[in-house]
Length: 191
Image (cartoon, rainbow, N blue to C red):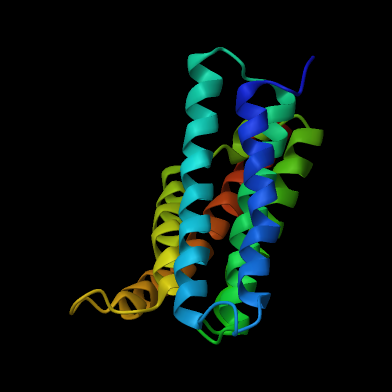
């Protein structure tokens, strides 16, 4: 089993984007203004999101899916999202509560999936539409909040704020959904 196929290399590239995202905001203001940092950070996050789509597409298209890829891809996704959320909290663009809800859910659902796999019931917590919907809102909200400047008369920050709040609500709903699915799966196993 080789871990060095094209989709996995793209995933590794996405992981390498995380320190670039962080470093952008830690450059001295004499090098880049906040506006320039916001543009770069937004571009990095969008690039990461595009590579997430691309590695999955290529894995299927080139028939290079692997257990390692199935493991590392969601890790890379969570790493970039959690990093962006922490930066947004530090920049005072989202509340710590929103960050805790979204990050906490990622840990709970990941641990739940891992545990369900160990008891042979991983299909009981397979990705559902509500989880995908949460991800869509989150992946649109984060670049809006990283950029946080109006484009002409379009209030990008306000749009991002609304979307991240919706994502937080969907985060709670999806976590409850996955917990219920796990309980049902375990209950069905006992009968």
